[in-house]
Image 1: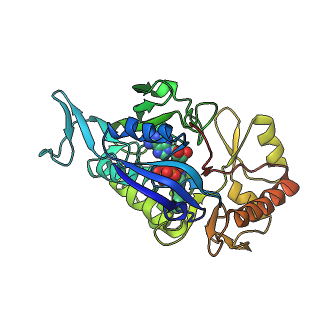
Image 2 (image 1 turned 90 degrees about the horizontal axis):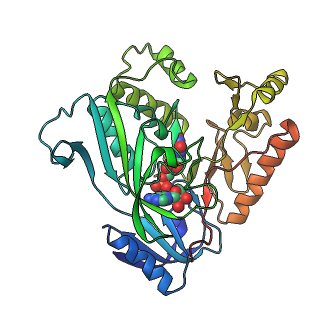
Amino acid sequence: MKLRENVPISTMTTMRLGGAARFVLEVETLEDIPAAYSFASERNLPVWIMGSGANTISRDEGFEGVVILNKLKGLSVKTPNGLVDVRKIGSDDFGDEIILHGMGGEIWDDVVEFACKHDYTGIEALSKIPGTLGAAPVQNIGAYGQDVAQVLERVEAFDTATQKFVTIEKADMGLGYRRSRFNYGSEIGRYFIFSVTLRLKKGQLLQPFYNSLQRYIDEHGETDFSPKNIRKMVSAIRSDKLPDPEEVASAGSFFKNVYVDKAGADEAEAKGIPVWRSKDGRGKINSGWLIEACDLKGKELHGFRISEKAALVLINESAKSYEDLTRARTEITDAVFEKFGYHLEQEPVEIQEMNK
Ligand SMILES: Cc1cc2nc3c(=O)[nH]c(=O)nc-3n(C[C@H](O)[C@H](O)[C@H](O)COP(=O)(O)OP(=O)(O)OC[C@H]3O[C@@H](n4cnc5c(N)ncnc54)[C@H](O)[C@@H]3O)c2cc1C
């Protein structure tokens, strides 16, 4: 277990903001997890779990506690003879259905790449989402019509309340749009997810495709909807629209989309706001559209640029403090509220004191 002290959180998060963490512990084995929590409790310090910091914001005062970084690695396929490491297995054919078991510190996109390479459908539209496998169920990552809930079976976690390793089945995770029991409600921070199990099938993404994916398909005359090719298309769309976190500081979409009931969807449409309806009449309003309609797209606010390509994305061009972010966020949310009456909700989570 690697220990570091006084580490700037700006260097551990893609938004590159915030003060220092008192301690950072990198956990690499299962035994490291309870040991890391003991390290914190012996010093009466709170804990914050982190994967790769792609959805995490830190305040200027930093974190007077222990950041536990998930570095547990391993990706296996379940076979009749037990779990087999995909990087060591000789055969390339794993059957029509696969149970994929990955340790939480695996890079999410490596998992997607493996699935697509072997023609398994289910996560190809989630290509290139930055972050770790362990964080994927936390906000139920989603893009282009897929979300991880569609293929998730269970997670294994260290339960800080009971100090035990537990298994949590999908049905018990409270999964919704960018939501789960891990990021919403009274249990935030209770579970350290150390493994994730997915069930994937050979096949391909079914139509109707998500709008922007369909647009790409039409524009490029694509006819191959295999996982490999959908991955290629999604990667192209994303690299055109979304900043590469290696080069540009952002947390991806900074605001969640707005979900409305049927009456709300009717009302929004009557005002000329585009609504994506589900079969039961409820609707999704693209928050990027609302921001753009407030003439904010491409604008610079307190060191943050509202992306010219995707108005949901706030790029940290020159901001140095969380205060700058607060000002920029307030100007955007106020503008949208005044014009349309919707409260935009922030997507990235903020490091808070918990689990002392
Ligand atoms: C350029 C860009 C594009 C993005 N595009 C998308 C997108 O298309 N769709 C989408 O859904 N998201 C997107 N995101 C957000 C981000 O990629 C996801 O939220 C991702 O799952 C974050 O993974 P992470 O490991 O960096 O999590 P972190 O930011 O490190 O953590 C996020 C939250 O999960 C908790 N957590 C992390 N690991 C664990 C664990 N092992 N056990 C328990 N809790 C844990 C943390 O405490 C925190 O609350 C994007 C982000 C960026 C920067």
